Length: 171
Image 1 (cartoon, rainbow, N blue to C red):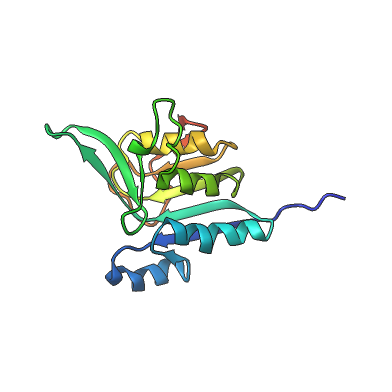
Image 2 (image 1 turned 90 degrees about the vertical axis):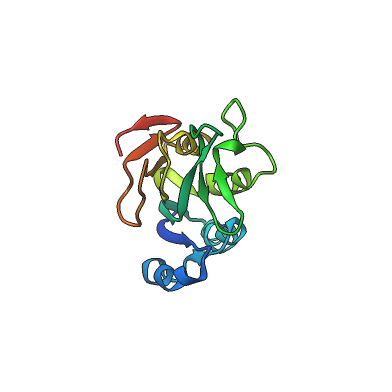
């Protein structure tokens, strides 16, 4: 007899500023972290250790755009606490995460923790055309939907842009 894996849902708030902690606690309970290492050790690894995977993982954070000297948008990032970021700059020309980056560390830990056809939502602002979200979804694979917000993000909802296996779909 094969043991069935139980799937879980979680909301985690990546908190950089101290003044946000009370709000994080209200919205995410004890699932608030200060950086990628804490997210991996306190949220992802315990789920994997129990033989579970995430049906839904909702990451509440901040995001923004990179601009060149002329003001043109040249990339996006999601702040993951401290100086940690998931960043379009952390992917090579083949859209794979560059080894040794925080993005690669996070995605390597997360890729085995997402259920087949699960949902990963980032409530971070300024993901524009979703290049970062598309790369994340391509790397995670497993038909996981990765969604977020093209402009203003907020902690409720599933976002207004979404990708599965690197391809855009309706959120």
